[in-house]
Image (cartoon, rainbow, N blue to C red; front, top):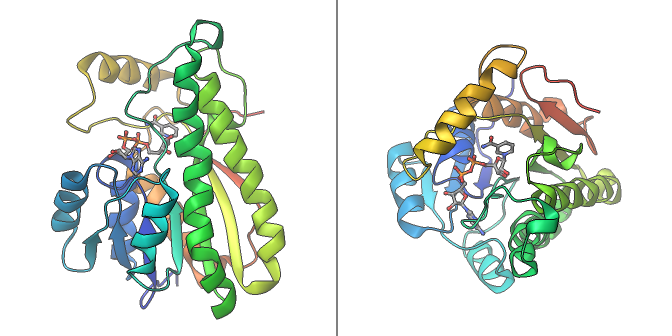
Length: 247
Ligand SMILES: NC(=O)c1ccc[n+]([C@@H]2O[C@H](COP(=O)([O-])OP(=O)(O)OC[C@H]3O[C@@H](n4cnc5c(N)ncnc54)[C@H](O)[C@@H]3O)[C@@H](O)[C@H]2O)c1
């Protein structure tokens, strides 16, 4: 059950954090995994750590030409996990206090990044009659939060809507398209500031199951959605958040 042997997966933003956990879990389920990241050294180090069935594939998801050319070079992708979503410039700031010059980064990675990667993989999925698209979104894309993430939420919410339509348009082609709305995750990557770690750790108390999520928690959900057994699940936004109530 949930065997991904023979499948090729591409996980974006997998050089660290949640994406790394997703890549590791897909590999354990038998898939061959392309490890994308904006930072080439991060993609290479992650692929090396993951072993011989993992290959680094650095590019920025918001650069359409780079996406198309990188994906054309690896052949058909069976499982696309759109995980890249936190721009390097991300900081908590409320909409009224945000400089308009900061807006685009959130939309570029979270909406155009997803669209670019889908557009480069979806035709072959449909032609071959099998494909899985999984987009990593956030509670910030499904509900209003007063923590300075309005533009991030706009990108995340846009991707949720895009995925719903994609799911319906491709439903008769053996392709499923689902979104995971994550709750608060562990942030253990080396480039995460001590302040950010402390804030996140203190918020763990609010999570009903009493801990933050890990990349593997998300990876297990991806393995299920990527499996043959999940072929009747499409067009859904699934909260994976340790029991937090969402509206
Ligand atoms: N961390 C959380 O609490 C949390 C909560 C909800 C949702 N999410 C979502 O989970 C996903 C992963 O988050 P994370 O916490 O692991 O982030 P992270 O910042 O730790 O890692 C993300 C990786 O994506 C890469 N990346 C950034 N922009 C990119 C681009 N344009 N092209 C390719 N790669 C790019 C970064 O270089 C980085 O290595 C994101 O979509 C994020 O929005 C995270």
